[in-house]
Amino acid sequence: MDPYAISKLPMQHFIGGVFTAGHAVDRLAVFNPARAEPIFEIPRGTAADVEAAVAAARRAQRSWALTTPSERSRLLYRLADSMEAEIETLVAIETLNVGKPRRNAHQETRFAIDLIRFCAGAARCMEGKAAGEYLPGHTSFIRREPLGIVAGITPWNYPIVMLAYKLGPALATGNVLILKPAEQTPLTTLKVAELAAEILPPGVFNVVTGDEVAGAAIVRHPDIRLVSLTGSTATGRIIAREATSNLKRVHLELGGKAPVVVLDDADLDAVVAGLRKGAFYNSGQDCTAATRVIAAAGIYDRLRDAVVEMAKAVRVGDPDTDDTEMGPLVSAEQLARVSGFMDRARATKANVLTGGLPGDPSGYFFAPTIVADVEQNHELVQHEVFGPVLTLQKFGTEAEAIAFANGTDFGLGASLWTQDVGRAMALSRDIQAGAVWVNCHDAVTPEMPHGGVKCSGYGKDLSMYSLEDYSHIKHVMVRHETA
Ligand code: ADP
Image (cartoon, rainbow, N blue to C red; front, side, top):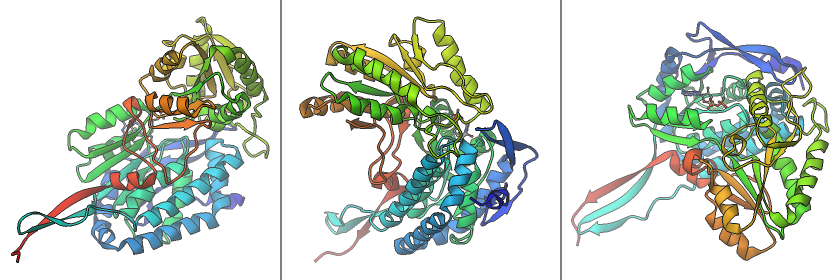
């Protein structure tokens, strides 16, 4: 990695194709979580910055909407190619800013690039219902049109992937985009903006940096027709409420509390391997992370012992070291939050089998943690911890397993482990979630949708469904003389 490439990164908004300091008076520190040290400052965007971004987007909107799908596709492919050419820089920035192990950052950046390529292809495959005469002398047809100016508000756990989640479908369907990255992790978004400046027409993709001040201004702005948030359920509620004032569309991918239902015939080695990644990838800071093992009584003890052994073996450390599996949490705030959950848990009957405490104090590290003997109403079962904490529960009947799995406010991801196809089919039907994985956990692909039910939100990212969410259907009816 070229450290100079990072030091040159513009710490500014990207509006109308240029980087600009904008109107902000305040600046926000950006940290390296592995060293607990500030590395950059970004402008704390204001309503005036959002207004400037909307003005730039408005100027770009009509001509971008009128480009052919082929032309939009070509430019998105070029953007993906340019990200690929800069992949080492993007990976280095993501590792530095989020504390991700480098190989995870690599995998995620490749996924982001692949997703933009998927959207580039999908731009040319949007479908509408066939035209027809549904009233005598009238021909109807369907146009799929862009919404106009749309906004994406992204979280800090997967910055470059979330950028692709929002940018891909928004631009593919002819919208112009204002993106507000999380205040903690804006760096790869700014790097992609720098690349986009050479490829996309000015104003098609804009970035406003900052926190909830800029976010709230986006949600209030009457000319922004859709806000797509990936974030916490608390923020989703605020955005859904605020959006009622101008009835903009809201697309919400929120928290999760993914259950891992293990039946008595499951391949336990596969379960443990799945949990190693499912629970501890990205330090558990993932809305589809495996957080609650719900295991059949017959195999519970064996699984518990194997999971504890696995958690102790997870290699936690410097994200830049090749064999590191788990880096730090993203921020001091997140470390305090996860520590708070565990401090409170120790005061209950919950049994902390391993971990439960912060790790190396030179960064925001927390130990891989396994907790047994938790009741269904325990806060570790009910609330999103967003850290490397896995609870274990034992079930007797499958009905009880389903009651545990569905017994939270969330419904984003879930996994189910069994060799029996019939039980897998029945249980995957009964689990309330946007995605159910059978004999794997948290596998995503651009072709398949991602999004939840209940308090995990609504709307789909990824897949053709996301392109549908970023467009609207217009019925055009032409009256004419018929023979
Ligand atoms: P977390 O609590 O894990 O930081 P948030 O939901 O607060 O997650 O943050 C996700 C994104 O939502 C971030 O980009 C953040 O700046 C933004 N955000 C937070 N609060 C608001 C708000 N009230 N209105 C709009 N955006 C917000």
